Length: 147
View 1 (cartoon, rainbow, N blue to C red):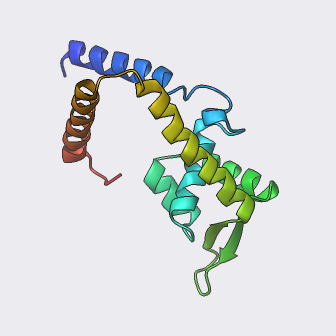
View 2: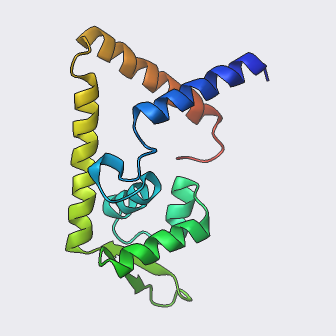
């Protein structure tokens, strides 16, 4: 692989994660980190998902996801229900408090992008979205697993 291509992609990734402000402890004005927010949001999007599915979907380490889920359960944001006949597989459900936190993440995410793009001309916004769609299309073409 061309080293210049690797450098350019890594530079973009560094810039974009800073632009999205994912390195802050309280991502999107919440008490959660970016990985915690993503895990909470996955349960919100798919009530009844299990920990293994979250790990596969987000490509996250099982022990890390387990710690996040234990924290959410302790804080009253989710519950776990054993799937009958499954040898211990637990489905995850957000409590009302967990749903409120997930909604806040979703709303704050929209607000963040809206604020960052508020001065951008429509033509540039359209071009940006087209470029992002192209990036996703190309990456999905060569991705071994569906994200």
